[in-house]
Image (cartoon, rainbow, N blue to C red):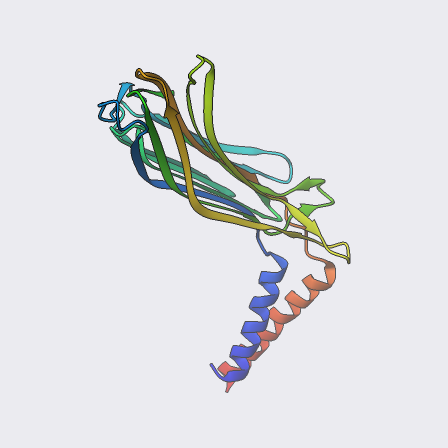
Length: 285
């Protein structure tokens, strides 16, 4: 194949990609490297800081994926898994022609009841359909624990959240493309006066669409990575009960990709015809 043939084939391939370009929505969250630190708030009370789980939780996850045809026909797949005990490792996934969802969670005997969580998903779209996805990983119920008097516990998690869209909006379909991801962490306990005390961390990212000055639509991207920490302090002179819960979740959907303009289709067909002519000349030569 000579240089001219390669150049014509490359141009035709680009034209095909431009006319059938996939729009998509994607989400991904990872949470792990759990670190637990105890701090003695009263060095003179003679109490060595301690913490113990009084009720364990199991890892839990669910999710699903769906594909829609232009006529509204739906194909869905789903999954749900519950670990048999707190140190179970569970994973699941679902796929359709236009979407995918996956989740995993590694249980642990530590205070949180897990050592890591991960969820991911994507939805593709083209002239023949579009998709949606969702996934969740979490404690099945809150993990209950007891903490010693005059003790603070700090729990830290390394976290990464990424979401993005490409096409953004289909005005003919009247639908917008979106991708979301959230992290929820909290500890519930009591303060010195016997009132409920909650410390929490919530992080959410969302990607939708934006419109340019020319009226065209495009997608958005968003990401965050860092450490999320919870600190619960028992400043009472006796032990206290508390609960901890962790959750990560995603969701998103694509939109039906616009049908190529007639001019684009003509260029694509013309490019393919030219490729055929060049190849025929090569064979005759």
